[in-house]
Every structure is written in C-alpha cells, then in structure tokens.
Length: 251
Image (cartoon, rainbow, N blue to C red; front, side, top):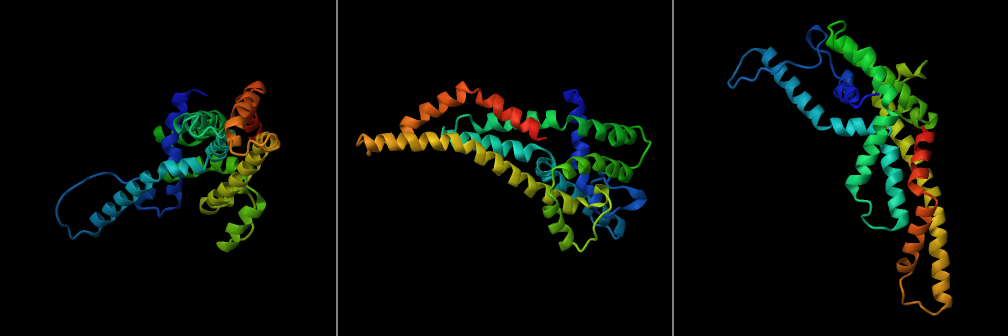
C-alpha cells in the first residue's frame, strides 16, 4: 500500500477512541471550532467548549493510542531487547530503533489501514456516512487485527471487570476492554521473543567470564572481551535480518 494512503488513514485511526465518547447533536463526534471570548447564558455554548477541550485532550494522547493499537509495541520492545543483549549501550540510537519500528508497523498494518480507508475514511469524506458510522466502521478492522493476537485469558480479565457477558464476536467487544487486553498480550509475546534473543549472548558472556577466571584475569571486565564476540556473532548470522523476519512471521 502506498505510504500516502496510510497517512490519510492515520487521523481516523487516532480518533477511534472517540467512538466510546457520548454522541452529541445529530450524531456528531468532532465539534466545529468557533472560538469567541466572552460570557454566555446559552448552555449550548458550554457544551461546545467542553467538546473542544475533550477533542484537544484526545489529540494529545492520540500517538499513544495509535502505538497501543498496532504492532508497534511488540516490534519496539523486541528491538530494544536486541540492543540490550548486545550491551552496545546506545547503538543503534533510539531514533533508529523507533524509525525502524514505525516503518515495520506501517508495513504490517498496511492491509488493516487499507480496510479502514476503504470502509470508513473514503465513504465519510464523500459524505456517504456520518461521523459515528465512520468511527464504527473504522474500529472493525482494528478489532479484527487486535483480536488475532489477544490471549483469551487477558481479554477475559477485562470483560469480567466490566461485568460483560461473553461476546458472540470480536466486534461486540468494546475498545475499552480490547485495547488493554491486546497490549498486555503483546508485552508477554515481546518478552518471550526477547528471552530467546538473550540466550546466545548470555552463553558468550558465561564462556568469556569462565576463560578470564581460569587465566586469573579477574580484574578485567568480561564485557570488554565479550562485546566484540557478540557483535561478530550477530553480524555473521545476519542478526538484523533474522530479527525482522521473526517479527514479520509472528504477525
């Protein structure tokens, strides 16, 4: 999918959480902006002001919402585990890891964003559906994606807390329960992958430490010796290719 298409879809995805907010007059969720300074005795003016404040608050947390509803969480955690296991401090830099995680997220989420664009964004821009209908339709592909990688145990935790009966389909689950369940499922999966990444580098550290102790070089930090070997191993096995391939296959 073209990158510009994904960027057109992102604003609608960022506002998916608005579907959980109260619906105002004529099914409108996004308020019109009409800023006037002064006092008013009309309750409608106060309602519009509250809508604007709510929208500004929503936009301020929209990046976090997007991060938690996509594959970004798992990707960035696994990449961070790779850097930590190599013990290369700030190499690669945070900007490189975040940038790679974002582009991998766009690649993985491409079909989902395309579905949001076709079923919700374009019909809304063409005036065929209302805002509320657009948000509802946009949430369907996102729910399908998150539902595939959400553990039943995690989802059950939030559904029981909300006292909601077992839903018949993934579309019946509210985002307020599905998103946190998806996040903790992704955290567990990412830590499982991180553990497997740590094992070979841990073996190298243990071997180097044993060799140094047997040679009586206890004052020499093992990290100084093991770091070049870990980097050499990672390069020889084409580590970045294997890590990215594993991430893509996991989705």
